[in-house]
Image (cartoon, rainbow, N blue to C red):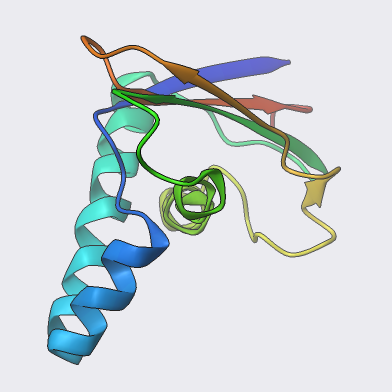
Length: 124
């Protein structure tokens, strides 16, 4: 079964997170928590259902421009996977649960930046 959901806007990059942590450790924790909450609300809104291991997860990063490096953009996978675990959609984000290479594609859409997450596997 294939399930997809979209997180509107840009998620914080690795640079954003590191800069927040350098300012104040609590600020870094807030950046992560806020991003994870956005992911969780998007998954809830899309009615993503719990899945069995293993799950293939892929990401389509739609940015408003090409200013951010791809490696900084894709570091936000952490927020997505942790949000899915917190919701109980997947039990864990370890090697047993996540199959494959966490594939990324990148696009530009100034009017509608977002992250499109696709989960493939068997439903619970």
